[in-house]
Amino acid sequence: MAYDYQPFEFTPPPGLTANEPRHKVVIVGAGPIGLAAALELARHDVPSVVVDDNNVVSIGSRAICWSKRSLEIFDRLGIAERMLAKGVTWKVGRTYHGAEEVFNFDLLPEDGHKMPAFINLQQYYVEQYLVEAAQQSPLIDLRFKNKVTDLSQTADSAQVEIETPDGAYTLAADYLLACDGAGSPIRKMMGLEFDGELFEDRFLIADIEMEADFPSERRFWFEPEFHEGQSALLHRQPDNIYRIDLQLGWDADPDHEKKPEVVIPRIERVVGHSDFRLDWVSVYTFQCRRLERFVHDRVIFVGDSAHVVSPFGARGGNGGMQDVDNLGWKLAAVVRGGDTGLLETYDSERQIATDENIANSTRATKFMTPDDGIERLFRDQTLTLAKTAGFARGWVNSGRLSRPCAYPNVAPDDGRLPEISHPGLVAPDAPQGDGWLMDHFRDVTVMAIGCAPEGAFVPELNEHMQRRYLGEADSCIYLVRPDQVIAARWVSADSQTIAAAKDALMRGQL
Amino acid sequence: MTLVTEPNLQDHDGFYADLLSVHKGLSEAESHALNARLILILANHIGDLAVLKKALELARKS
Image 1 (cartoon, rainbow over the protein chains, first blue to last red):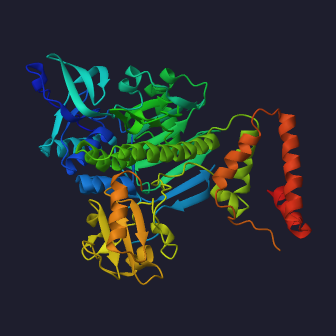
Image 2: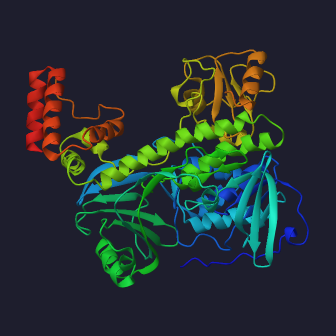
Image 3: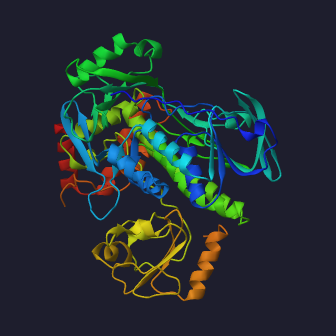
């Protein structure tokens, strides 16, 4: 069944009739990133105004693969349950060369986590759930059909001119978040370079609706029989919608390739019949680009406006969600008068993550679309070797799926504690009674096992906690950030040491 | 020692990217020559004739 697009109502904003007081935060863009940022700020009691030039959710499924980390973030925002109930859960990916499977991966081979490795869910559902959550929040002022036409900054504020169906007005805020997507008008207004690489290839991306019994797995083909010499990707989504990506080559004409009479025969060859309905079609060229810096005084870039990647690896939407995760608590502290050094750590940490996402998606895209000559030679011979040598199977690269970045923080650490929970990593989840460990990490948290410093949360010790946090040690203390990243840890520490680490954390020095 | 054919290089994606970038800007003949030098360098590093023979066989048979 096709998604039923319901336009959101335009309400004339107060600024049309009287000057609005200066806001704490204005968010430009009501896509998944802007809406998630508003909800995350609201969770930290910071009000925001969200403006969007449009009044409907995403046209077409667009971002569909949501990672475990994104689901953990959505859980804090209150919509993960709806996403899980609607989405298609998966964790296994299979890669084929021709008809033969050469490689498969299991993204979550162990239990004891609240969230699955991945779900597939169309972006329009995610946006709908986020809009509904934002409309419930008294701290979020959501304004559709409000288009930013100009931007300026003073020493301590950002100001935007906004056009609406009823006229123009001005908004000012302590900080402005540019969550306005890959084509970011804010970025263009500021004249910022968006450097990177364009891959000379074109891909057809189609959603089709059909009754089928394909497994809930990601399936990728190099040179399949049904699409000669190219690559193909198949993902299952809810509502009997399937996502098909087909490599077309650089010479393909995008307008011609989007015509139903051209698309339908291609898809018939993929699925082996013609009993389907075309839901959405697009032809893409992939790019990896980033801003040099994400924080420009009072304007902060978040998500695709700051960096874009090719989609193999699901690092676009999930990367953006991790930006929101990293920024929310820091910006909340800063608008309350906290140390602006925190915003510098947003910039530096997310730049590292961006480079990691760009490196991974560039490598996958190169493997899929090798230049003629040496790149193609190595690619084809890796595929050949994969049939006879085990090691080469892992080298076949159809996308390395999004994982949270390990921030290279210099922080108190103890080598006796397990590797999977060292500082800079997202805290691994674990069961806690009827609930989950992640539910306890909502603000700066000190967690202690085998000792009880003042104010510490002492979790239930079970085999997962033992393996993920304690290891062979007799005791441990973890300082966990509001974004559930481990800030520091000790086998034992006095309250002064812990307090000093907390203090350094809130000054952006940990 | 036997030839290792199971995964043995942790950051293989990083190596693969380096391998492609070392060829950047070379003609086909130059790339061919680079590959030959690379094989000789690695063969010397491995330093085990039995392993090298197994590698030659595997490469030929694939």
